[in-house]
Image (cartoon, rainbow, N blue to C red; front, top):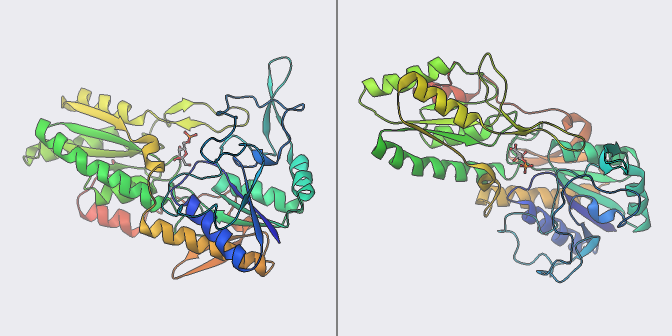
Length: 382
Ligand code: F6P
């Protein structure tokens, strides 16, 4: 067996742990593993008719590992030694490399999405690969499904710090992101209290508020704003005023980047364009300005951003990632292709990719965590 591994979409702490678990579990069975560089980029021939439309990262040799960046990398026990605790992915990744909608720069300067999936399938076969472990979020799993339909034996592994993949209790990377965000909230408390200020913190979570909810509750936020509960800015200010009356002259407001006012839209940094999705951002500074205007309180905002995607995975994420990696190899051993490994506590099980792709696991409004937060007096701005 020759198994290819790809990491696609935004990185998440735990990717390297999955890679290591796949490689070591496969090695035990006498199978060989190959990492595809940067999503599926590594399977494409260099040059040719397709010029990638957007700015790309450095494409020269990878000095750290002394290998060319493009292509396939043979992965054995030596290549995955000591990487379980490392953030990022040793294979590189991209969230702009959908083989079915490859953004190509045409000679007239326009950008067109070209379906390059057949080229990818041919390259997969030409390299005599027998199975693909596709590690990614919803977007990458949808791509994996498309490749499965084109005859590539695929097993998916769900990843995202946003925790918005359906069918799995958790994705790896989420717990680490929550820990990072909670630590940031702890640090903001002391400065907010010293200055009698309101601090508004923007956390990741485009369409689901899991990170904001879990870290906001754990980090004792006073207000938590999530995409699932459109907020009324006046209710947010009411909470801040009520705290003042009670002698608490500072407040911490946590907002998921996808939070939006009842009568408004999400804040965008960049509209969706060919081959890439919209980029959200800016809600914290909007909220901060509105709070100052309505309450007269000195307010500061910050965006925690990609810090949430970095760092060493927590023990929980490492364990989950290692379990997912070995479960993916067991799935290959049993010929269970077209599936995704999922965490269904206490076990890791499998679901068909079709059950998962194109859907989003948002925070249920009757969630116990929301209930707990409300019982503790935290406002959701509703
Ligand atoms: O999906 C993971 C995620 O971190 C989102 O929370 C965030 O909106 C997005 O990726 C950011 O993507 P990029 O790395 O392209 O800025």
